[in-house]
Image (cartoon, rainbow over all chains, first blue to last red; front, top):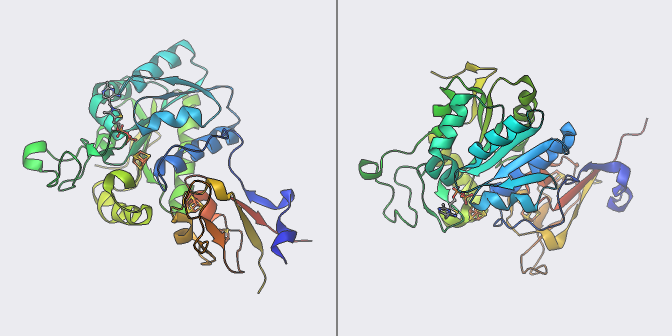
Length: 259
Length: 75
Ligand SMILES: Cc1ncc(C[n+]2csc(CCOP(=O)(O)OP(=O)(O)O)c2C)c(N)n1
Ligand code: SF4
Ligand code: SF4
Ligand code: SF4
């Protein structure tokens, strides 16, 4: 079979979501933000909820997502996405409401909003990109930065005796009664991408049950901030990030799967 | 050897990250020889037969540059 014989519309087995705008993603080459952005569009398209969904994007590389998926968006101040999402969901309880946040946003300046939204059990989906660094502003240390990890503000590596250990905020929110589904995934391999897509599908679907927050962390690379090639960054992530941030479901249907 | 599948690369959207090359189980992807796209990035091309249309390259691509085609089995 010649390749040209195969290239026919009826033979398409994968193409990007029709909800994606024509804009080229502003993310750096190989950044996990791009992969997750496309997965969010695919999941919204598959669920057929593009007219019922409202996304909230706060500050960081995350915020540019509102240029890329053709749905309704609200921009929030740094860290405040879950507070804005709370308001939107309470006013429009039948809409699907989600946030898309980085770790500097969700686990640093937005810690209070994150914890209290999860504690209140708001019926929203939180998508959390953890790349262990402040990406947009030039690779500063975040609360999630690994012990010993070099960043522009920890050039000799994070010293836990001074800066404390990295915070596992996903584990923390899983302990709160207000979270219903909590999982940690990645997008560095095809298998990981497929699992993350399933997790995102579930995280949107459970909003109908009105049982609390669905929280999906995606451990991702910030290859620019880490100063590595995309392929090396994913390898480094597997070897280092996954040890501290192990992948898998943490809470399903309100039941904790970890001690 | 023939191919059950093939891909089309939207060359000017490719950012040359190389993640698709790593993800291809058939090892049929590579950067085009000493060429760059409009943005100055090296870009990916199919360099051999044997693509199965598995979609792995397309779904790890952060920019969804690749469309995948697979020949449907005829009854
Ligand atoms: C109130 C406020 N403080 C600081 C900033 C500067 N700022 C912009 S992006 C950013 C960090 C974002 O990091 P993260 O949430 O990890 O997202 P990433 O860029 O890594 O995806 C900061 C501190 C801001 N925009 N607003
Ligand atoms: S700075 Fe980091 S997080 Fe931001 S787009 Fe680049 S690689 Fe991704
Ligand atoms: S579809 Fe599969 S076999 Fe074909 S180029 Fe992509 S990864 Fe390789
Ligand atoms: S993964 Fe996408 S952007 Fe990266 S080299 Fe392959 S086709 Fe280009």
